[in-house]
Structures are given as C-alpha cells and as structure tokens.
Image 1: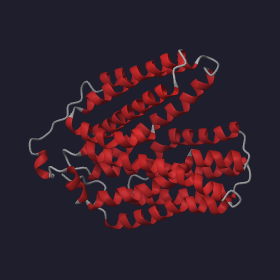
Image 2: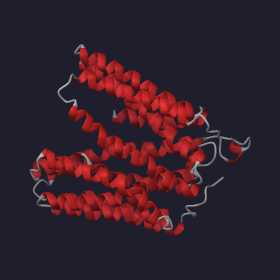
Image 3: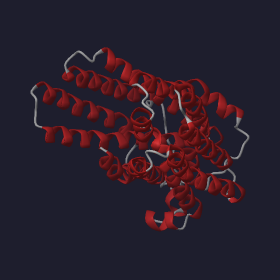
Image 4: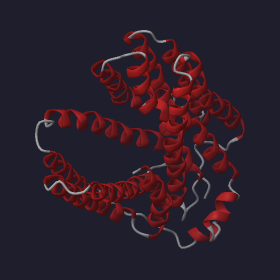
Length: 351
C-alpha cells in the first residue's frame, strides 16, 4: 500500500492537471468503493492472500488521486490568505474519520470481516455522492495564458524553483521524525515500556481529539506568524516531545509528551501543504501538490524503517533512541527558521 501511494502521487498530480479536479473527487472514492466490495467478496470466500494484496494496492493507489485532487481544488478556489484555515479544516475532518473508524470497527469486531469491507464501500460511495453534490456549483476559470508563464516541462520548472526544492527537502527530513508517531512509538510503548494496548490507544485518541478541537483555533491565533517560522517552531516541539518519550516512565509522562507533540503537529503539518500551494504556478498545481505528497509518502515509508532499526539497536537506551529520532526534526526546524528569513511572503502566490 505504501508503494502504491508512492507510485500514485506523481501520476495523480499529472492527472489532476489534465482532468477536472471535480471528476477525480467523485470518481476516486467511487472506484475505491468497488475495490472494497471486491475485498468483501474475497473475505467471504476466503480468497488467496495475493488477491487481497492486489486489491489493497489498487485501493491505496486510488486514494492518492482523491487526496491530490482535494489539495489542488483548495488551491484553485481558496484565496492564499485563507488556505491554512482551509487545509486545517480538511485535516480536522480527516481526524474525525480516523477516530470514528476504529470505534466502528471495534463495535463490529465480532461480525464477519466481509461486513466491515462492505460498510467501508458504502462510506466510499457516500463520499463520492457528497463530492458530486458539493462541487456542483464550483466553476474554475482558467486563463488562456496560464501555461505561457511556466515551462512546458514540469521537471525543468520544479528544478528551477529553489523555494519548492528547499521546501521539499526540509519537509522530507521533518517527515522522517513525524512518521515515528505510529509504528515506532507504539512498539516502544508496548514492548519497552510495557504499556497495555488500551492506554496506548488512549494516547492516540488524545492526539486526534486535540487536532479536532484546537487546530482551527491555533491557526487563528498564529495567522499573523510567518508560515515557515510556524513550521520551524512545530519541528522543535516534535524534538522536545520525543525527548519526553525517551524520559517517560509512566502513562502520564507519555500523555504530556503526546500533547506537546500534537501542538507541534498542528503548527507544522497543515502549513507544509499550504506552503506547497503557494509555490505552485498556474497550470502545475496538481503536479506540485503531487510532488509534495510523494515526498511525504516516501518519508512515511523510510522513517519507520529507520525507527525500527534504531529501536532494535537502542532498546536499552530509550533517551538516545528518541534524541536520534528527534534530530531530524531539529535539522528541519533550523532549516525552516532560516527559510523564514528569505522565503517570499506567505501571502503571495507566484503567478
């Protein structure tokens, strides 16, 4: 599934620039619904494992097209000064889904797996219907001269865009730290610190609830702060939180570190997507957003692998483990602080 997301990101960006974004918002979840029906049927008949691999690959591949089209459409229709709020609102919806989904799954845990897949298909079809209804009145006016201001070659254009290249590089380094949030942290908490699964799940509930409740207010509070400075501050909070994980000896310590890490997440993650939207020239918005998604997906694939290696090597030295994992955020934070002094105004989109 990770490989599918990596492969799909640049293809999704190219497709979003060639097709109507609204078509992708409608078609991608509908197609995912069909794959989930296929998964339901295969679960009901105990199909071979490789068939699940194939459909899950396709499912993850299609998911990138929806995400990229969403990012590109927000860039199209939302004024630059409101995009942080727009991307943050989408992230709140995402967190509501991530919190509700496992709760529904736990409630239906005693039912056949095929029913879970079928219910997921229904939700995908519902998402497609919502996209169809909510985008009906959206009109994107493209000027004839859009492409005259950018290179015909996307590769050449992005290689000349020093701001975007620096944003991609620093974001990748930061994602190496951010990606430790799921697999490495859960393994460390259960295998090394011997937390039970229930309190571990509560830690992730704290993260999701904080994003839902406080992400939009935090954006309003920091709306006058330079975007790249915000990302840098968020990166440093990740470092401090990870040091807290290394020092944690009981659940309350983990909870305090998780709260601090979530503040860092709220300050940085939505701003990274917004910053990519500011860099994107007309005619290449989809490909710019797809490139950022590619960097994020690679970071989320490489980061946990690095984390697993370090966890095996530094099992008896938890503070050293988390300092090393947090060092990526430290490097990215320094880079973003310097970037904030030289980057163009966050309220100006290059035309």
